[in-house]
Length: 275
Image 1: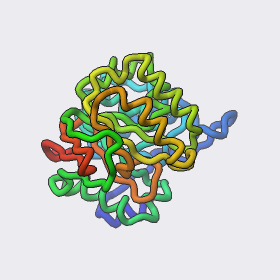
Image 2 (image 1 turned 90 degrees about the vertical axis):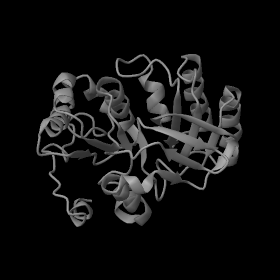
Image 3 (image 1 turned 45 degrees about the vertical axis):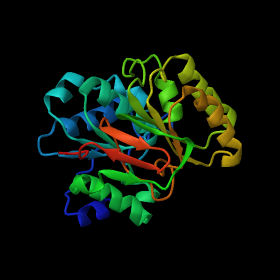
Image 4 (image 1 turned 90 degrees about the horizontal axis):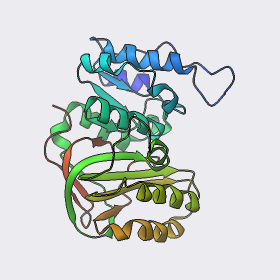
């Protein structure tokens, strides 16, 4: 992954604890305090222009409250790239810092390492954002129509887990909500969506983009549940939009105003994601 980034004429700096393993919990990469310190140090370093996550980040929620958000706000805007459990950071950066972030492939992810489409779409978003104003997924409408709003979202189970936390928004009102997940059974995805509905998180949402459901149950089993839970919202819903835990994942900017055309399977940004 670092070699790929160097091939883009970048000078990647590896955070000191990125290869750590937690002494008690082997699903965590180091202690909460060390991981939070790595992120905050990178974000507050004026020589760093972007933070590209290495992996999906189990335990991100554990470190979110250890960050000094005032110091990070004072450091000014930078680029954050990641997905999966990084959803918790996308939400925190939106609510605490008001920044655009990129839901995209990560440096140690197999898709980033092996898939040209994933690499090139992220590279274009970073270096030539004016060329990716239209994100054409080839997706199909679960519910037809067009909608305008501000992009947000991420991994469904993380969005459900964030309900009630100090970093989550009251609702997706006025938004184009992006949803995807990995390795979940249909009943659990139903539960997550039902939780978002009951908590009012989907009140006022303008449109929904569905990404990948890798290692979940077959899509023909999953699709009726998605239609049942989301169809009553009366908003356009596009499926198979090609972001998330899938081969050739597209980079989706969060926090930008855009138009969703569910019939055409496109997301058109009002302005380049990065200035």
